[in-house]
Image 1 (tube, helix red, strand yellow):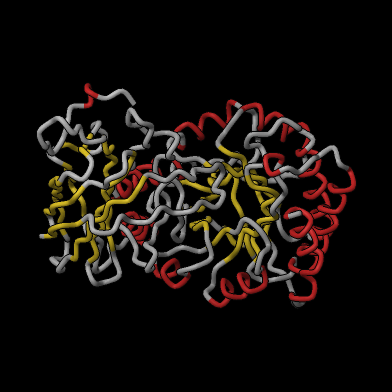
Image 2 (image 1 turned 60 degrees about the horizontal axis):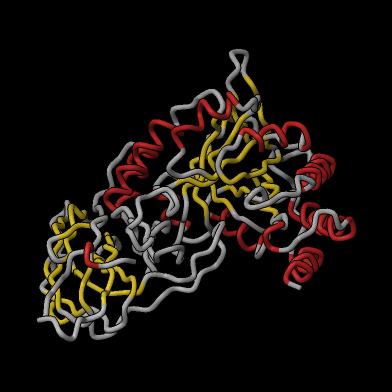
Length: 443
């Protein structure tokens, strides 16, 4: 039902958009020495982009020039907002996923999808903020029917016929030589390869050449180590980088692996320009729920503009729970008190506000960025908060939890860290204890 509703929404989009007088020509060019370059209005255009459509003033102030969407939901509003800020848009066409129940052997549904996109493209193609059409996002994730690439090609072919002013792109989950082969073979109307990649970003430069892609590519999502790429506790909780550790990795990955490929990479879209629950509430978002920015954005601003922001985010050096650090297998007895501490600092000497919370481990882990429900903090967990140190009480219920640390500087910036731990039942015959050895438990 959701699929049909979405296709119908695309068909009726014509009622909510207006035609624009003149498109801005965007095209790919290859130089005599083999370097690919995107051109917009006949001038070179390197993408310094963000995945999301909020906080546009912040993006502009940092030297960004483009945003990416995953669908045409509110497309006109997004394009208009971007245009007023001098930004462009890689407009996503949400090609349906097999993992969500779409059958690419159903010719009628495939036809309906193409017709819906045709209407959308006709209505949006002349908007001056439009940069690239992204035909699908991670349609290869947990799929088996490669006919999806035929559908992607039909959509890209339609775009080339209807809109000669904007190139096409399709986006895969990571870089798989088999997907490159299939796109080369089945989707010849795709102009640019888009790659969503995190911890494996450093493998793309050589990998895409080895796989046989001859054209240009975009790093269409990138950021910290993915929740599937990190160490796990013995009970299965992924160990998240602190905001400061992420800042280091953002800077390294951009300077070495994105801007470092001047031959084929035409830019990138950092993920996520906003906040969302995905494994944790902080894993991918570059902003807090209140819109505060983190240290990674300070680094990107310096890279994009050559200037360090006048006021920057707090820094987290370390966090300890009962003397142990994240990644240790930390066990705490039900309802026992325990100590937490952090080493934090602020480059500008701002007065910092420190918040501690205990939150259950998420049990709603999904794939491909699908919406997740966020677990709620355990009330009454903080017994004493002295900023860099605090006394907490373990929840009563056995299970996996995290200690969350959030630091704000009062100037629109924040830092964060979290440490997974496991609550074990109290042994009624044993004396009270603040922690126990993991060797005593079998989880």
